[in-house]
Structures are given as structure tokens and as C-alpha cells.
Amino acid sequence: MHQQLTPNNKNIQPLQLPSEAVNTLINGPLKAVIPNGFTLTEGANLTAAQAEECAQALERWMPPKDFYLAGSEYMGLVIHMDFFRRCGGFTVTNSEATDGDL
Image (cartoon, rainbow, N blue to C red; front, side):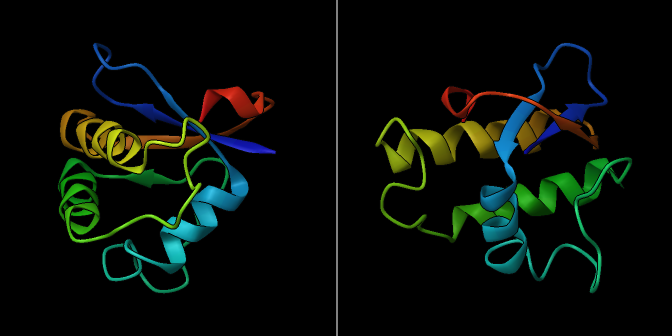
């Protein structure tokens, strides 16, 4: 199962993440940003301000080895920070993406 983060800014492509990756982010660097007990499940919304806070939290985080399938933790992290900064907030939906989409 994957979750798709659909940006409010229509000029930005949606971001698809495996559920395990979403859980790692929520329980790690985004724990201080996302309200306690909040989960990124179907229909969840984050505002532009919350998305910017997510980007700032990721700046201070080093992903675990092999977190990104491409093997480049730095590039994957930059892609996520860019998404959070430019998305204008986002909505979460479930999707059936392939593992190559991370």
C-alpha cells in the first residue's frame, strides 16, 4: 500500500510513498510537526504552514541507509523538502503505486 500526497499547488506533481516510509517520517522527523495522534491516512489534509514545517524538520534529519530506493539519501531528501516547500499544503490519498515510485 502506498499513500499519495496531492499538493494544493497544481503546478507540483503528487508524491507517492510506501506506507512504511510514511510511518518512518511521522514517527521520526515529522513527529514534532504533525499533531499528536494524527496519521497520514486517506483524506488527511495539511496546510501550507504545516507543509513548510515538514520541510524544515527534514533539513535536520538524516534518512536511514537505503530509505530511498535510488540509493541516494541526499537527493531523495531534497525532493521531499522541495515538495513540502512548494506544495501549498496537501491531501493524502491511498494509491496502488509500484515500489519504483519512491
